[in-house]
Image (cartoon, rainbow, N blue to C red):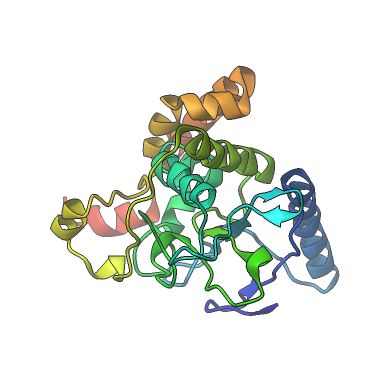
Length: 262
């Protein structure tokens, strides 16, 4: 663990485990942190963007696939040390990132974090070293073949890990099944590119609001398959209700900005 950029913000790394176990560990970890903080007289929050003007909190999710004890993502002959399966897995997640954003960033507040300038990835691209990309491949070290993995940086710590891990796996596995081709990595800081430059490179961004994310999710066959029709339909219903409740609110920002001049 170490102190992160924001005030009172900390990163704690959890040891890898199968997806379902990791979802259990994530929920348990959040509960324990809150309970221990409360006993010490503090409140611990996993809210994605609790403080205006400071970095929000993410849940960088590292993923790899294993077959017979061997990392299926590793290929020593590839320039990025990624196998065909690893590349297709990443390609699948990039292709479906926008439509499953409402799963890994499921709250109104999630989209206050996903804005340029605060180390939160908003552009759908991948890279080895570029931390502005949605998916990063940690640098390969000789002898660490088993550690080859993809780090998707957009989920936030307030998401439902069961739904998030399920949709991420479905997206990646579809990439393998369909043989999706991985685009070239983006090593340039994506925040420094103009909108025209991003369009020229075919780089799209994640939804900017929960409402936009829900509209994209509602059209996703992949998410319906991953969650099942009952959970999928109910999730859309509840999230649209949440968005409608939020967007009719009158905020202090609006009153301060407009009341005296309009």
